[in-house]
Image 1 (cartoon, rainbow, N blue to C red):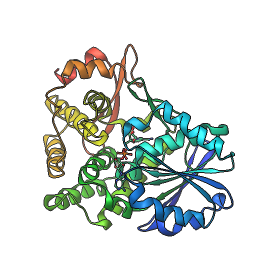
Image 2 (cartoon, helix red, strand yellow; image 1 turned 90 degrees about the vertical axis):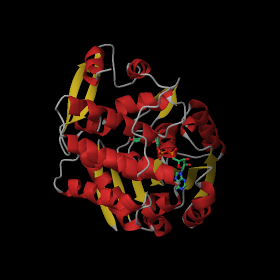
Image 3 (cartoon, rainbow, N blue to C red; image 1 turned 60 degrees about the vertical axis):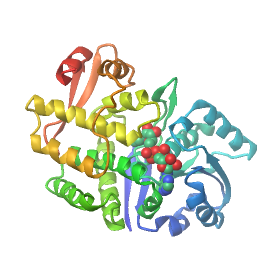
Length: 360
Ligand SMILES: NC(=O)c1ccc[n+]([C@@H]2O[C@H](COP(=O)([O-])OP(=O)(O)OC[C@H]3O[C@@H](n4cnc5c(N)ncnc54)[C@H](O)[C@@H]3O)[C@@H](O)[C@H]2O)c1
């Protein structure tokens, strides 16, 4: 088992990673023993993993399972109200817990509830997608979408424990698996631990040549490395003013494309399109070596990931949308660029300069 503690603000997150971890690691969660647990998941995950997890947890605590609709639309204010109501009906208190068994959607929503109900309950994340295992389950960002703007409402509230079981990824549909891989590729591109991360990208390039389905061992290595990279960045900049923003590489355009695609693109797919758009512009400006772009595009194609902005979405619509991004203001935005693998940097830009740099 790989285990480490991440100290963020005044809270500590215990991160446990092991193949099959979700089958036995609950016995380590002393804080859950004798308490009530709201076991939150979605309709796709429930038939695959809920019963086993519920049985595990029931040995130590009283479990209230809740199954929500799958997908981004679930991260909304009405859902928050319904969950507060369920917690009240079962007389949950602040010493009780939420276990979020799911992808980034269940994780973000469950964490928001845990952080606000009675000013904060115990939160355990059991992430089930690549995005959640390598990224969203740690770092403490909780969120729901509001008025069509992604993640507009949220808090900073790190989980007490994150149990990462790469075996849970084996039931993911191929498309979700590939979309999740974008966030890991992003982490490897912005990471400064060279040459290990560049080699991991090469390994991924080789493995995806023959199949999108990666071996469980490689998945475990990639997820662990993604988590290590994110841990390092958030521990240096919990409130997201400096280095943590590197994790937004591709997200300025990605969030806009995701919203404009109205559900046709997964989060990871949209972010991937955003990364490629930025890398193409950087190559045009001689800021990035062509072979880094070619390697990333090849990787995306092997994973059957889109690399082009859908024809129905105009550059103007994307630029208009980036002005609504919560990280932008009237004057402009802070763009994450890379000069090469492991060389990210932040550039404050006006909206006009951003448009010009993209050549749009
Ligand atoms: N808090 C953060 O720091 C952070 C970081 C990155 C992304 N996010 C958020 O994460 C969300 C995207 O996360 P996601 O891609 O995990 O989306 P998701 O939670 O919607 O999961 C993707 C799909 O996979 C299904 N699924 C999940 N686990 C499964 C499994 N093991 N087997 C079969 N099906 C499974 C889900 O039901 C869903 O249909 C976005 O809302 C994004 O804003 C948050």
